[in-house]
Length: 270
Image (cartoon, rainbow, N blue to C red; front, side, top):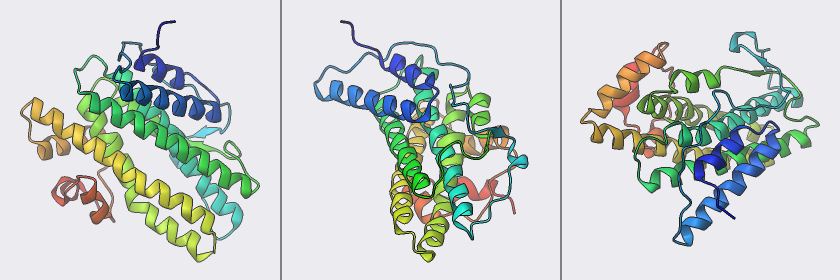
């Protein structure tokens, strides 16, 4: 029986609607990839074409960000709504990390590039499932309330721009998670919800790696094309994220992920 290619596995995840089935396939695909690597016979990358938009469950209803109801985190229901929003981000991240593999499979990249994004996709899958467990404990579930439809717009706008995708998704959108997660951890700690604190701390520690993958491969491509990474990052943020980056920034964790101060402060807005 012929073995699947990595891009075929990615597209299988992307075209799966149900969130739990999607994440199960994601984790299984990652295991298959890394088992093949460990065996010294990695799967072929392949050239399966990804969908323009990944398959999504029928719920939650997706709304423009400015139409989303305000969350009040002073109640269990409000805190569940916050976790629902994070779960939605994590499920989008599963698709984003699998999409970057077939989307740019025509570009010659080292095997480590594929290792990084497969690992990131598997970790995002774990994050989604951990958050769903916490929602269940709060008598809620993913799909229970609306979610915003803004995240995939960045993927669509950078669908033909490899460096733009690396700059905007991991180095802007995921880096934002490093800025806001400590405050969420503190909020849940203050109400005595240690299970959610543990979940968010896992997500926080692993998201640093995902931002770092973006920075690493962005710098790699800048070197290949003789571009100044800082100048190129500023140009791409101006093109794809014209509203600019909003402080406060977690300078320490951003530095740990390979984002120095002079990358993002010059494109910050008050």
